[in-house]
Length: 470
Image (cartoon, rainbow, N blue to C red; front, side):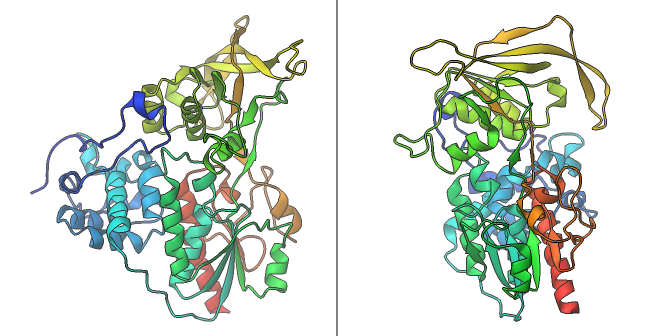
């Protein structure tokens, strides 16, 4: 009989006033008994609506059924057939707008905690299984993958499972992409990412770091000189956006990319870091997405007394996950809705600082919502005469990113749109160049980890079909 409790089995987590002072993981994970109790809530629906909501089509009812019976390793193997990064997805996927959104249990209560169960199963496997994955026999074909983020790693993993000789070229010194430089340790421990990458290496995937494709080597050279039969571009969208308002060049103004990269990848929060970061006492984070929440919560952990989320729309329009907003509020983050900066103010005349060199505040205006814009959200309009100032010493811009132009500018005949995103046919990631595929943020602009993984999975299947067809 299914467990008919109306609410999800609660996930143990650190207390807010403790976790906002450390970078340890907030959520502590289910025990085996909690996981089995939650898994028993699944009705194992015949039409499986949850699977249709998953970008990589994990057989959700099947793995949950095994979890309910305590067969945790079998549950993991079911997930692993469709997902190369289960421990990651269980932590950072927006399940509430994907698989859990379509859960029948959510009609009269809370949906089954699919993400929490996926996390538990993956963590159980990583803790208890010592067996290396079996390396498939080589099929003699070589594929290059650019970028070791979610889309690139997924594409590489799926191709390796089919016997391809896959080499991943990564610009940074660690594989993982946004998983290591963008998402904070308290949401996704980097040891989890490293373990997932090692699993792919055991399948035969080669990962070469510190290679900037477009500078160190070009896409054309990979195909014409290095002998790769196909290339997948999963280079992400790491070029930050700014508001183009006065004062953005002041010391103490960061893009969220730089701020989070220093904190997450370079461990700037540790004493004696080689890449220190300004520990502001009053920090303003401009934006309302998950990246803004990550930056604000990181700033709080760095010791800020007050951290503000400055967002030009209302709370109802926040694009961030509800869980991230909830955790941010619990940790003391202050939300300034219907507010937009117009200028970043600088210091002047201080002996120990260059004139106008450091942030000392932001000038803002209040907004009101009008008619919906092209995104479907109500357009924010300035309220005349509503100007005011906020006293802050660090400003972090978290208003979006776009793909770096390096690859598109050094690859012959690669078509992109007005936003710099690579144009594909939309079905399997094929670009305007034969044998060159792309997916993830390099195609869509900044999006979610699981959507990037779905694109990598589709492209891997298309690359296999293309090479075998040749």
